[in-house]
Image (cartoon, rainbow, N blue to C red; front, side, top):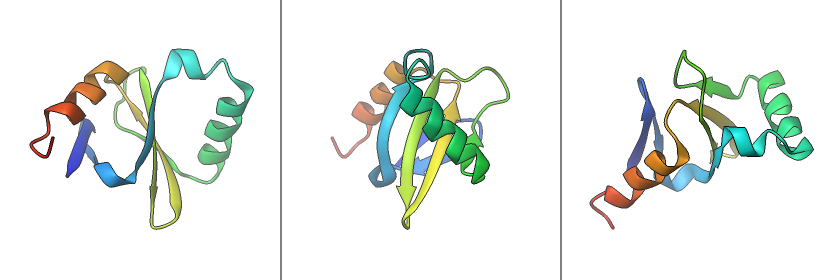
Length: 86
């Protein structure tokens, strides 16, 4: 199954490592390092042109991807709970 992150961006649910609130997590040095490393590696994918509200960390085929979504973590988690496999 897939999770729609906004815009034209969807990710496979099995690839999701975590969904994080951007305002809360960017205060951490470790998160800033992760985002910086992902950006340098070209692994940051913006699902919106507006200011993102959440970060979705995924691994697919051993590669790390960081998605920036306009949707809140609560909205994304609600979408996961509403999927038919639950």
